[in-house]
Image 1 (cartoon, rainbow, N blue to C red):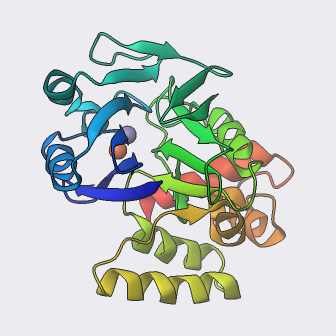
Image 2: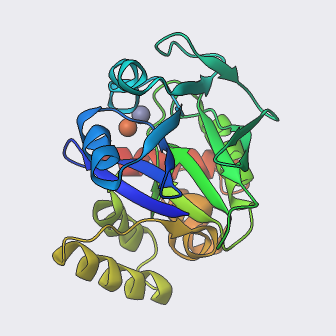
Image 3: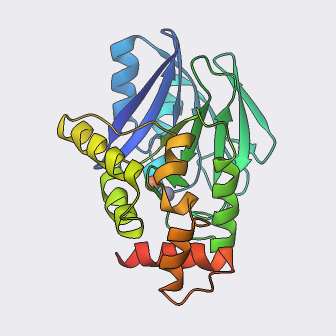
Length: 255
Ligand code: ZN
Ligand code: FE
């Protein structure tokens, strides 16, 4: 299986997964990069997987459906271009011969879902939309800090070698913030240097992995004493894990 992040707009990735003949894409905000890739590799688009309703994730859905006849899968509780196969926690999607498990991950939007494929050759795959980014997490447009923390906890519990396919190349700016939160985190310093080199060479920093994110992402590290101390310095109750998470998220909003 081939996994390719197709750049779209200024910093989106549309993930393309294909076996040389058939393909799926995740969150096609724009149809053209997908149509180009299908033509270039000679692929038939079987399905479109959508994580949430924002335009930069669904803008290309209708054009791609009309051009290819692809099935469209998406969250049960959001407005996505119809016709749509509606999904929620525990549902399974089988595409390209692989089973994807649907996880509810509210926070960025209230109906946001993620797709996890344990059985993918190589290592497991996670399509997490705008919930988890490398070094960061999505803004809380519709959900609460408590919901987002629960969602991130469910992603953090996935196997460490899971490839984390985020929908934005936000890594460098996220890591700048992460270094402000944890200036003494050596893993973070090393990872930042690697990501800077990737970007300087025009390469994506993604996919990341759950193991990597647990080491460097402040939003998966809100129970670490270093991160709690930063939240307490911003008037959060250090005993309350949701308050700690909310304080770090608020700091990032203003950073
Ligand atoms: Zn979004
Ligand atoms: Fe987005």
